Each structure stands twice: as structure tokens, then as C-alpha cells.
Picture (cartoon, rainbow, N blue to C red):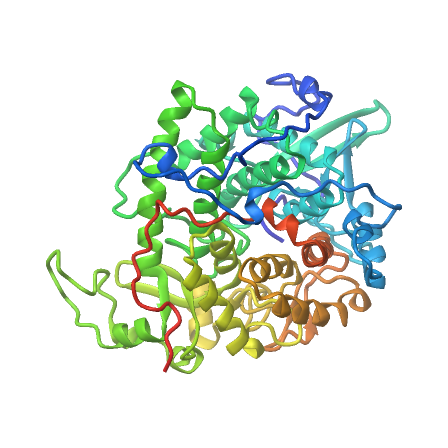
Length: 559
């Protein structure tokens, strides 16, 4: 699992106070406040950055991002609303998936606040799979939003926002005020009739790493809720405005960085174990970029908000330039790196990170097709991680960190390297797996991340929703249909595993939990996106013309 508390006997840091004992701010008025459906002449996040601080014309977008998702009425207990708007019958798996998703619901004081990570009664060890994880809940939240069930998402957003206000300590070190929890667990006392929440901010996680991605996912989900409901009142509350600013303050503070990317420790995201993703991992950079753009659309233009907006705009320009220039790899760029000179010292250096051509891995020359490209896993001085990571590249498409040409090239790569990236079960979390001596050095001999297993080249069904969203945005729905067909041939029969092992993703993971909630939710979201593409507006942002692409050549080189 991701970050979390070990075992079922969880203890809080002494400085923590459970929600049952104190409320730092009154959320009841927000939870009970009726939702407003607001019709707007212009979508709140269709504003270009040029509207804020850069001269230019206001952008007009004719796209999925320009309207809200329809909030249909559910036709029955396990039937998604989107299915009622289509003339064809849903797959038999859909009803089973909804039933399984509802079994995972967690309530606090009578209100649903999330879904547990897995509902696997066959497993002897619960570990932290009975907790609500911020990142894991995102596909569940999207499924409920697409089905017109918005209250659970609102409850989750507000409860996690309240947890953010807790004092967070690991040993004698106090974490930043804006850190969001990795997970939380609801404890029910049947004798006293009291519910309490216990949260983990990394102090119980493997390796004691704080979840950098939790805050980004929270902002992205807040924007998805706003797009789905057409209601900006939640995002405009002082509590949500403050929560966003606290998260962004952690990321936008000045320091010794010479790059606009975020410096991170290993294990701070979905890949929560030692896997050599320390430095500037693509997953975090893509989520950072998307969260900045989502926050930019939701922050108020008061005195404090304007200052934050100005910092966001500057960072977005620098970040998009950096990522598109230095993280992008296609056939032409690979050939250029292969011919790099080293030890260049001047402002005119071509090899700005002093990457040694001899460090190019052998597998890369066979893997890179003439048609296609992707954002590499990591770029830092004298180091490029050329592995392909699914989540970072899909989010790059959805957030428009990738230019339209780059987005098309990423989809070309899926088509050209289908067996390697998808195989028999979508989707490889990364490619290729590391093994032998490299595995010993990079993972520290991690027995869970052996080659083609778990985070080391394992296949994760949850990533299906991200692939589907990226396919729809780039006009390649046939790729998503092919991947969904593969998933439908196995997932229900196999009991909704957490991940699959093997070079082709053929085998249920050796330590995979069954009835993994985000595997279930990821499938449902993928199905609903394909049936009703208007839902894409919840999780997609159109390209901002104020961020000029720096790559003039074709992003998908033709041999």
C-alpha cells in the first residue's frame, strides 16, 4: 500500500488531537449547507494566465473543459447515471463494481467520508488497507461525482481539510502546516457511541516519508467537484481558500533550488517505496503543474489571493518551459543526447545537465520507436532516469503540461509499444523493471519490488481511468476501448486485485490485495468516461496559449 500506519493498533503522535475532541473550525455549517447550481457565462477555469498578470487576449476555449458534467439521476441502486443516458446496456461487471465500491464506504458520525483501500476479508493481515487514503479515494470520488452522488466527495474534502490543521510531528520534527495526510482511519466506539479519526502524515509510513502528492490530489479533486456540481461556493469558503494557500506555500517557497521542479524524497507518491524516484520525479512534477492550474482558477482575487496567484503564474511559465525542454524524449532527442559533448561550461552549453552519453541504457535504443515520445522519469545534474512512468505522462496530457504534439506522441508510444506498456492487463506503472545488481542498489533488495512486480514494472488496473481520460482528450478512444476490454476479461474473475505481476501483467500480484477499491473505481471511471466524454471536463485542462511551447520540431519524429 502507499503511506500508512502499520497494523491495526494505531497510535497517534502525542501532539495530535482527534476530531472527536476538538474542531479547529466549524465544518458542520459547510457540510449542511445546500449546494447551489450556478450557471456561469464563462467556465471559472477557462481563464488564461494572461488574464492574471501577463498581457494578451482572453482565451476562448471550445472544449470539454468549457462546460460542467451533467448531474444525471441514478436509475437504480448499482447503476451509474451515465448508463441511463446511453442506448446500450452496460457491461455486467458494472453492477458488481458498484456493489463492491459501496461496500468500501466509510462513515464518520453517520456521514460517508471516503472509501477504504481494500475490502479483502480473505487476507490475514489488514495492515493499513482499512484506511481512507487521499490518493486512493480520487477515482472513487470521480465515480461518485459522475453518478451524481456529490455529498460524499464534499464530506471527504472538508474532513481532510480539517486534518490539515492538525499539528504534525515525526519524532521531534514538526512538519509544514500545509501537509495533507496520507490517510486516515475512522474508529468507532460502540460503547460510548463516539467516532474518532486518526490520521497519518507519514509518521507511520514505510520509510517515514510525507505524502507530497496528497495536497495536489486534494486541490485537483476540489476543482473536479466544482466542475461537476457547477457550485463554486465550497471552493470559495475561507477554509478551502486557506487550505489551498497552505499547500501552495510549501511548494512555492524560495530556497536553494535552481530549477522550477520540486525536489522530493523517494517514496513520496504512488510509488511509496525505494525505487530510485528521488529528485524530480515526473509524477510529482505533473501533479504539481495540474494543481497549480486548478488552484489558479479557484483562488479569490483578494489581497492575499493576488499575491499567491502572481507566484503561481510565474512558476507555471518556468515549470512548463523546463519540463517541455528537458524532460521530453523522442527519437530525435535521444539521438541528440547520444551525441552530446560533456563538461561544457558556459551559458551556451547544449548538454546543460552534463548527462554522460555512456549512461544511456541499452534497452532505451530498442524501446524508442521512430513515432512517439514521452516525459522521462527524472532529470537532475548528471542524471536522467529514462524509465517510462504511466501516471506522470497521463497527467501531463490531462493538465496540458504536454503540448498537443507531445500528447499525440505519448499516445503514439502506447500504440507502438502496446505489449510493453499494456500487455495483457493495463497498465504498467513504469517500464522497464530494474533487476539484478541494479535492483539491489536502487531498491535496497526490496523483496516486494522484485522485477515486474508491484512498483517495479507491475501492472495496475487503477491506471485505466487515467489512460482512458488521456485517450479521450487526444481523440484516441479506440485505445481506451482496447484496454478496457482487456481489463473486463480478468478483473471481476480475479477478484479486483491491486496489481498484476509479470512482463505482460499476466499473473495476479504475489502480495496483491483482492477487492482493491481503486481498481474497482478506476474501472468504473474509465467506463463512464468512455460512455459520456463530457465527464472529461472534471479532470482535464485545456492548453493555455500564454505558455508558449518551446519545441519547434515535431514531437513525434518520423524516421
